[in-house]
Image (tube, rainbow, N blue to C red; front, side):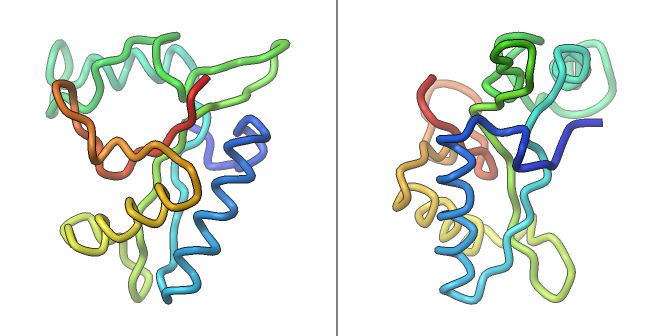
Length: 131
């Protein structure tokens, strides 16, 4: 199972993730970071969705190609995380305006928000830093 631990983020993105959480909290938004590091095996399982496994395509990255798979000196050091706003204990997958606000707040702390990607799979819940 993919990690949710902020400790599995490289320090620079961990610091931005904390700023992002605080920026959301300042607007009354609870933020759940539900994926930080993902192993290559887990990444390949995600890549298979919509291709050789049941489900919709959720990524264009194979194992080792995603910023979720980044390792430094043999230790997880993810350059990306996925998150969702929570209201009354429930993930707000269908609340596009709230998810967009979380995206804008992520950008305000220096993160790249995949909700703005063009020409490849757009991921409104994905944030990353340059490697």
